[in-house]
Length: 358
Image 1: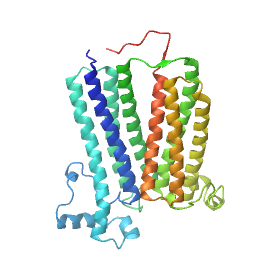
Image 2 (image 1 turned 90 degrees about the vertical axis):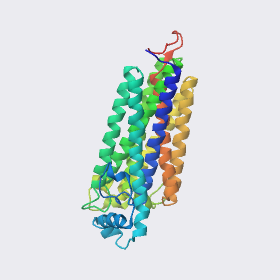
Image 3 (image 1 turned 120 degrees about the horizontal axis):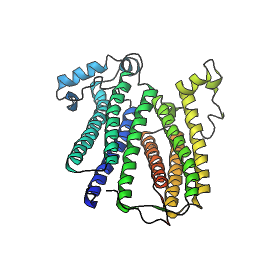
Image 4 (image 1 turned 180 degrees about the vertical axis):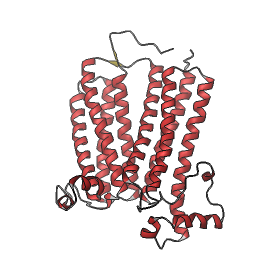
């Protein structure tokens, strides 16, 4: 089986492009949500929806469809056609970008599978990622549907699921990029495999907590909870906001009210931040150089993310800072994927070098 470097370089370049495309979808999707643009297109037309309205009559028809949903009737009843175009374009770009991801992934994937005799593990990865991309498209429409009849916005739970799937696709693609790099380089040395095992277990805990924190952040975005309690570290002088002492139950406030989901996001972020710093402190000095670099990247990425998050909150969540905070989330996940990859692809230095798989 041919495992020539040019083929691996081409594969990695394609997968890196796919990573950036998914990252772009996350940022465009965040902009769509924060500008209340996500419900401006009320139909799912995978083929015919590629073209935007091209005439005044088509624009009026599209606007008329939007005027029938609760968001327009209850939130923006005085919106003009020109204002509608402003939100329409963000949702249109988001959907078009999603279609491009499908094309950029599926077409080269088919060519690689047809042209090259690739290792079985790569085929399994590509098929799995392709299925997730298809599921993500369905999840996107499922999310939009939640805001077309009774709600004035999409379900924050479906929004969180939509973001979670996007980040799962991104992490899987990035892992495969590292995997192909590993095949090319042959092996990653590690001086002490027992130290690696302990570090790997704690790294997994931090990764899971980081994912949970990001998903709780999606709940914050879904309920516009970043526009209240814009103080830190206390919430208007309280550790626990007053909403928890009302008539509604604790779990309802925690997951259904803006104050509750913001408190949950703060709590998750603080716990994850403290555990990450503990991990960096305990693991850095006993790790080898390869893992040290990844550990430092994790630490700095999380410090950056928490700093931007606090500034965004204090500034009442302006769009630019909110999107930078989303970028920080992707950076944090990237750092953990890199670190976990290094832990899982290691070799005791006394063994002979591992040869590329054929």
